[in-house]
Length: 193
Image (cartoon, rainbow, N blue to C red; front, side, top):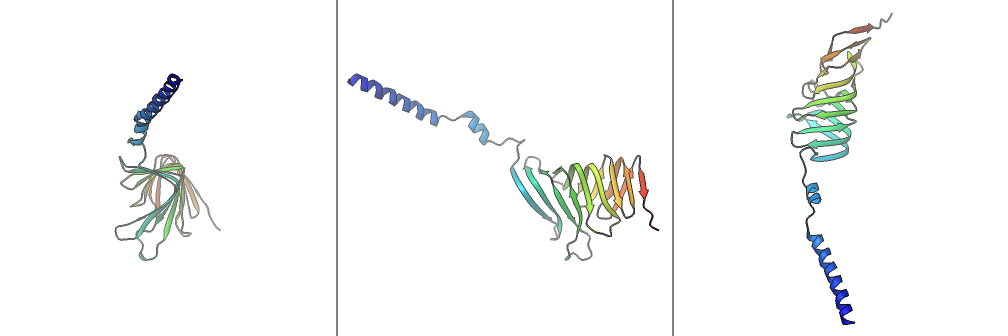
């Protein structure tokens, strides 16, 4: 009977030692998961709001997004379902913050030099009723958030006071309410009597 108990207790002890050794052994896949690779975001946020100010303290833009991912390796930020409000940076009354434009798209990428690349169902909409340029629709666009320059190399449609135009390329400035369409431009005017 002593031999049986010794054998059983020896097997239990060997089992416990094996289990303890297995707990102490580093798992290579677990260690690899702890080390962040360059293609993974530094952080991910959901339902985010970001406000960016100029060096003089005025708001330049406010961005909302369903999901935000920041990549530290090259400093870019990716947005899902972004909504960006641009402010009047050249206002004669800087104490009154005026939202000039609302930008929306399916996805966007913000580079570290403040270029916003909008992709998928892009809409730039003026928030001022008396703006000459009211709306810009395109599939992809690039907006410089400092100067508010906008460019697109895809079919774009612009609408303003009493006109609608479409063309294959777009160059313009949202702050100055200027948009130039290039290649295969069609314009429709609304004449009020």
